[in-house]
Each structure stands twice: as structure tokens, then as C-alpha cells.
Image (cartoon, rainbow, N blue to C red):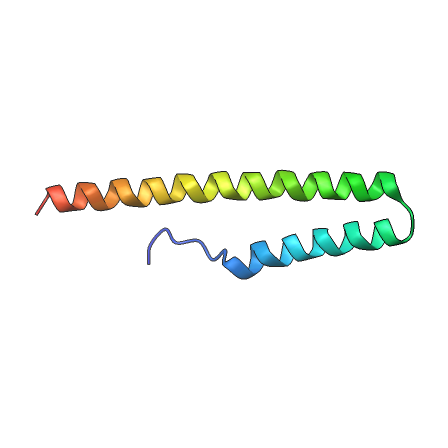
Length: 71
């Protein structure tokens, strides 16, 4: 499909898992500041991806609505 990105669920889940693992490992070793920083980055990325997903869903719905009007 033209204009389709090859970014899948696996990519986002992978980075969420990596952030979680780094935060958990840092917490286990007692690096509280580092764990807090990584958890903050993971939270920020979550909200960025959530916002992008909502925008894409809204764009898809608007595109489908426009396509229905043209028939």
C-alpha cells in the first residue's frame, strides 16, 4: 500500500520492554535516580505513541468518511 509505514506493534512493544527491563534492572541494583529517569522516558514514549495512534485513527476515520461521500 502506498504511504504505509513499516512500523509495527512489535517495534513499540520491543522498546517498551527494553525500557521496562532497564528500569527494573536499575532498581534492583539500587540506582534509583537512573531507574526514575528511564521510567520517565518510558512514560513519555508511551504518551507520544498513544497520541500518534489517536491521530492516525482519526485520520483513517476521516479518510473513510470522505471516501463514503464520493460514492
